[in-house]
Length: 434
Ligand code: AMO
Image (cartoon, rainbow, N blue to C red; front, top):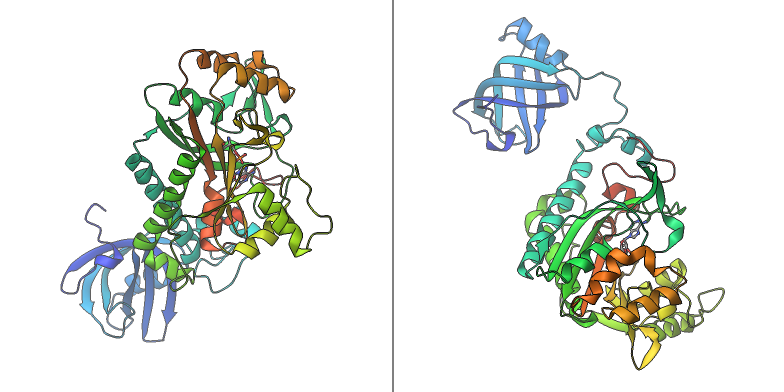
């Protein structure tokens, strides 16, 4: 099949070999068509029953929908064909027949439940919608990778089996590692910080994070993809600048590379790239504005995290991406630095989409003694983190960083209802396979 031609590249006047799936069979009596689909598009195969050998016609029209086939024949101009070209077959091979009872209809004519789609992802991602989402995901990540490199970052990969948690002790997946207790990593946080202290200075990682959260919501996964950044000699505002530019780059790449996919998702005229500086709203003002709406049953008090409802109310008010800055130190992790002139306030920030949080980040505590004090203030034992804290005795520069949830970025970009649509094989409380 080395000389295979893709559907989009078939030109009239040549004998070609195409390969793909049987998308549709249209039998009009004396004449019949098989529509073959590959990753580039579709092509019409014409059968004239009286003029072609019976065996060829039987093979072509006998292959059930979604069978994988290859066809060799003359490509001819045909204005009535969907692409203006059709193939008159000389030979057909059914490479892999499909069972006629399909668990879902990849042509998209019959809607399937999300759970059926997730159970049959191979067939689901043959549909235009399924394929469009994952082509866009790929473009988004390519855009992000290129932008990181523009910012002088080195791509790193860090262990996913670790000895300690970083994001609070309650949502860790424990595993047994040669008889010792270990965990699936919640975040590359400590490793990326260790690398800004190396001469790499600016690093990024795109990889899995594991959260044993009990939430069963349209925006939580138990295995998510984190887009992590960390940079040396940078404060939290510098990190927010990088965060903003990554957001623009991700949207831009999708807008320029995925026009067809956006059209399939109904977003052709409704896709705008966020540009300019995003609002950096102080936490104090954020809770004031939420409370002023009177929409919450219980008003927020200083020190509260923003509930889902509070995020929704504020998102509706602001109507576009925005940062929340200057969070109370007590609700941010030990590695976030507080303001020296007001230790109750931290240099942590979140980037919000009107529907949900996309990013957490902040300036980090790079001073050894203050870092140890931070562990103790949060009731953590610093000796369990010595591999990390020790490196802060050897010239760890001021640094800052953040992490996007890749699936949340895609979910909000495409207006998907459920985050599970944005990941091929989601892990949630019920779903451990496929
Ligand atoms: P945080 O825990 O806020 O911060 O995670 C960062 C971003 O990751 C995404 N995310 C998730 N997405 C789907 N399902 C989940 N269960 C889930 N948990 C997190 C969100 C979130 O904003 N170490 C810090 C980051 C940093 O400071 O650099 C951290 O992990 O989009």
